[in-house]
Length: 284
Image 1 (tube, helix red, strand yellow):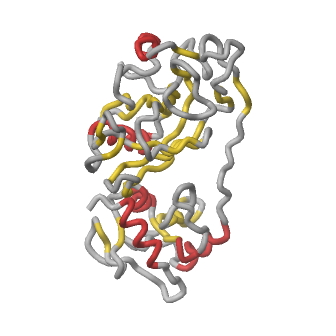
Image 2 (cartoon, helix red, strand yellow; image 1 turned 90 degrees about the vertical axis):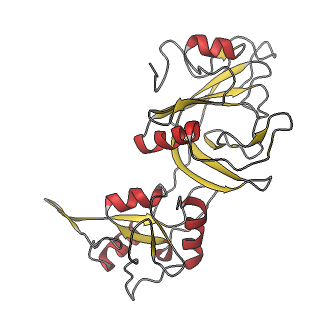
Image 3 (tube, helix red, strand yellow; image 1 turned 135 degrees about the vertical axis):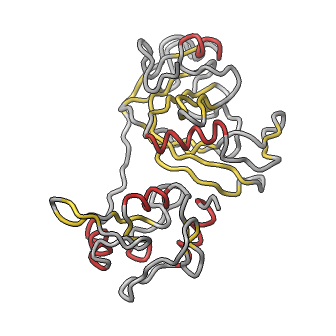
């Protein structure tokens, strides 16, 4: 049975000599694959092993590259990746908000990695996923994972060889602070009516809608928190938009549903952000 979250008795910073020990402890079951999971259940763990050139490790934020399309010997992409199998499992973890165990291996060149073996880094949340052209010119799927734990292993210890107890140090996650007045403004422009379906949700506390960024704010997208990068959407269409089931053409016609985006004369939308979303998130 797949376990999501911490494994009982295993703390962040714990060191393992090899993949067999990781599997025996239940931290990461596959002996070779970097992603443990199924497309129906979600992903429960990943290993950072230096296997993909597009990976980015910022410590508390990791931009992880999906599986597939790689020349195993040269460790470069030679074909496009697809959103299937374990790649889809990581996307499912985002939808279900399932925690993912992250392990750093000695081949992953980073200050938090051990000199030998593997270190359990703790729990991360899949905050976003998208497709883009990787360094080798092929489509890769990328996942932004953000640490849920307050501590991360340093990969250093008194033996100096990556063996035994790994030290731990405090870590600080910088959260983006969104401009609530802009979110309120886009809702007011549309009277809380979704720009896709026109529905304004009535609650006991009043009308409800959500402000959705077209080009995401977080790294590596770095979209702006501006009115021309915002949409007023109902929760259903917000989820569809963020997860690639809904996007926009350059003329603001809908992709994934019939019709065209409703746009007020008081709301200028930047087409560059629309194109970015379509190129990185559209599954159509």
